[in-house]
Length: 121
Image (tube, rainbow, N blue to C red; front, side, top):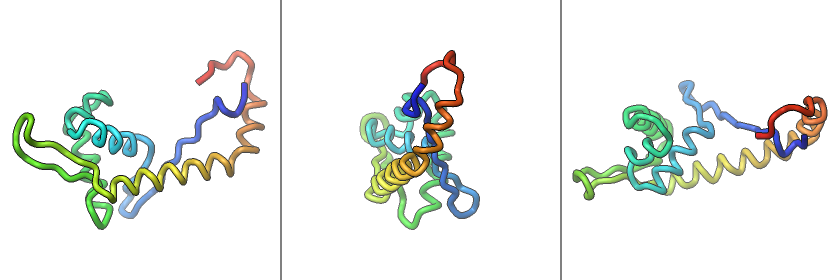
């Protein structure tokens, strides 16, 4: 097994105990792809309410919203990723890349300690 099989999942604790991690970043990406909170939620196997609460939490954490919504009913409403939301994704990805690089030696050693019958991720 190589260290490429190991995953580093970064969680960043924001003020008030709000955590920014891969799940919320994936939700932001899904909203960007689907232009809808409900469609994004469905694509991730979560309820609309859960997705809305996570987005609301992020919107309240940052100075500017990460997602903006428009009301209008089926086919007319929707949601869009804001410039702040795009930047949050970019910064999170950059932090993950740096963390992975910083941990490379330790991940290689960990990979070497794993049994050969471990499933590949």
